Length: 509
Image 1 (cartoon, rainbow, N blue to C red):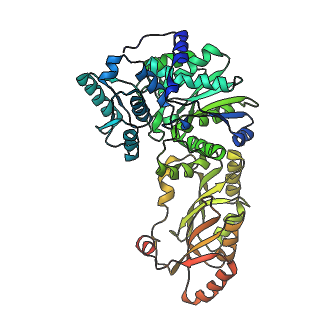
Image 2 (cartoon, one colour; image 1 turned 120 degrees about the vertical axis):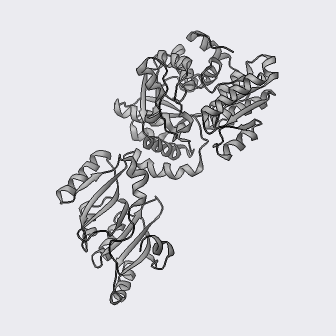
Image 3 (tube, helix red, strand yellow; image 1 turned 60 degrees about the horizontal axis):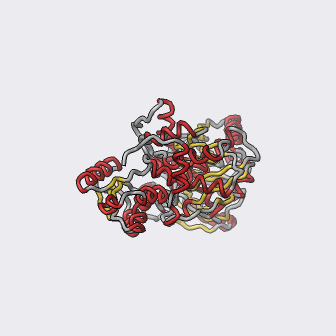
């Protein structure tokens, strides 16, 4: 099937006639009350994670396969995908009785391979990336007469995705803006062309990751271009080049563009969970991240904003990273490198200086007789303005400070590598502590112990649980142990002597 240039009216007819509801469902447009109150606009989320394959991709795949000729259906179809398109194709083929082959890279996680097979698709593992899998799929299509079904750059696929826009207008005909994620552009093109045919006053805003902005690159160049490198964090939209037909439509019908960071995407994942209890994949939360940024930059108030949760086929083990970075994306946490004097009580003085603010992380290891470098996280209520105030207070107090909140290397690696062995032998004992997470708990800990004995190692991270966990080393002589134990009892926190722990002995002592 060859691509032909179609008008907006042509696409409108195709969208209205798309038989996607033979397999897909009309998903709810759900209110997000917590986020709406916080940003001063009504936010509604299109729940495409509710589709049978937990992604919108089913719509476009089914629309194209169902429109094939009988001879094409008899010959079978093939696609290349490592994710949601693969599952949509597999279920579409099963529903229509069409043999469906999916070529997936060898690196595809077993959970995704098993899901495709579970929906009835035949899986071929080939190559180490999507481009190699796609080349193999096209080779097999030519060899066996299969029809190759692209993930986004075909009018029938675009029209299938456009049914989402139709539903959103039916569910709320008073939307001011609709925010759509962009990878290859199929969803954005389909929604934009539909909305502009029916309600041209509704703005359609495209959202991309900062490090995978193939639409932005194409808009700047006036034509699709190949990006040299892309991030795989939001793998559902990790596309090096936008489609030619999808770009043509986006260029004509999209009203605006927003690029967001990985941290902002993580923050949007958290927002979705807090309002709906759904766990979006990073690309599924991309459009909401763009909505929040667009509303802030343009100072929107009392507007009706719709966005799309495009998928929820997330890798469970990636949630640790998302949780860690979500606070930074929302500017609710700042990360600082601070130099303090290496002397008894310096920790306590430092914590007093930052006031009653909640410390979320504290990493330190003795390394020098005169100065200590610490890595500290601070909970923020007022974003960057509050962080700037903290930095100024510390500098006024004589503490050199570096803001690491936007330092990717620090956030991704350095925070976990702080420490090592001390530069000299220490009479050190190691303790782990648990204490209730409440404002001032860490300060109470330091005021009871840190002003009496030199702290030689410190690690703390607030994980949002009811109890905080601290690993702390103290320089203690044998003659100090009785008095130290008395202070532990006075403190009242649950603690354990970890001095003989093998990992401590191996890496830190």
